[in-house]
Length: 201
View 1 (cartoon, one colour):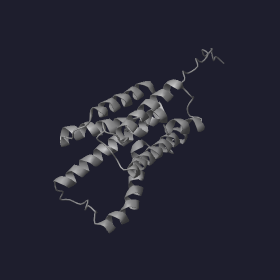
View 2 (view 1 turned 90 degrees about the horizontal axis):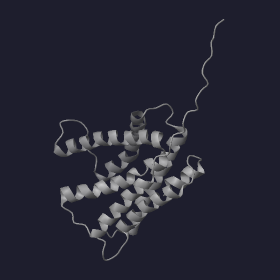
View 3 (view 1 turned 30 degrees about the vertical axis):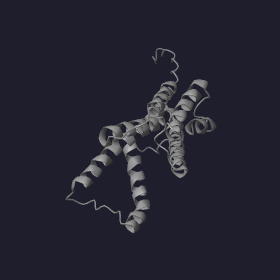
View 4 (view 1 turned 180 degrees about the vertical axis):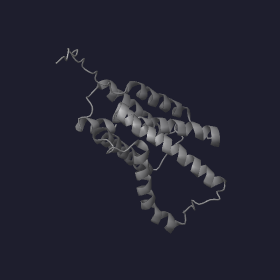
């Protein structure tokens, strides 16, 4: 829901009731997951809901900025490398103060190897996201957040044996319905050029 109005303001997209409906379906699914009630097993403190929404707002701005101004001739891997270096420098004082620093030098034990594998997957997935922004637009690409939510819940059930209320599966269905309605923006067809005439001297 953040990406669509930002894209409209920046002139990157045109208003569509179909796409607005798709985004509304997705948002309603997320609200169903976090809203307190007797049939929902995921009662969350309101603070963390706003933290999650702030993350979504950042994704929305990022996708639209990349879609409008590109990545300054950097490919997706270079963009992610720069972001990772900046992020590491910003978080370094926090991990040192809290005793959470992880020595990145070998030999690596099982948790460190798991972190390394997760980092490699993150590089591939996030680079794919940057590529998708350029191909399909920010409004469509940001819908990956719904997929992240859905697959996170599915993996938690398979790996951690977590139990969910039936409402959760309704929410996932609403999110995937939203994905169906939010189609990638169509690329403008190239105008046919006039046939080149003889160029005899």
